[in-house]
Image (tube, helix red, strand yellow):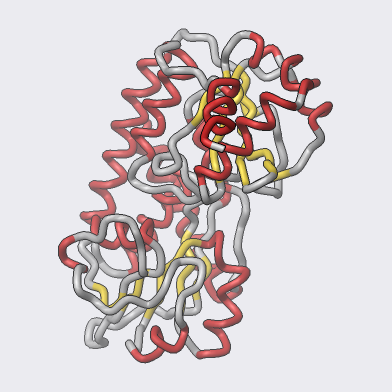
Length: 321
């Protein structure tokens, strides 16, 4: 039954994705995932020249067995088959001129960057596909689409089956346990915002069976005041980062130590504040998501994950000067 349900999800969403591909529209709803593309389907006789622009898309292409002609400049691991290929710049700032020189038939990247990058691609006449990596479900819908587009359905089906088996095992592990409410704070240097279920980390929380106390039907992130957050009374507070995780965590250490209002949060009083590893809980969904779910299980259900000590972290920062 579970597999039939997943197939219906993939089939229905894929149909919507292909229908919307000419509109270059990004859908912010994980349950209504779409793929935005101006790259047409390749014929059997046409040479396929694909460029991946982020490490997350690089790993997907590797798992699907797709050949590439260009890869992103990344600090992440580059699969062996892609090592030595021309680099086209970082995910956030791909070099359109360098990409154009590779004569791609498709440039694949995460849709979180579409708004800033799509105009550059359009101006340069670069064919592109932006895939949904804002949730685990969205990533697998994107995998199904790429499997169909590039005739690697067997590889895509195998990945989807892994997803189903992982989720079935996880759901069995937490069956009958009380599902907590969670506030997810994403740190920036000097500030923080709240993750809604439309963000990757926020969607992971709900995939893990918990309730994200900050809800929004359209926005990935919001900036509510602390009094509003206090009224939500979350059981657990999770801390993650948008980028520059060291600076973000320094900000959290100071915020939770010097801003007295945090001491009124029940989660703080009970020691249910946890720091998430940036490499596992980043901005885009990756194949690290099963590890992320295991961490959330330790935090939300097992009580075996070490809680965050803001005072100790702030004292250490002060001592280092």
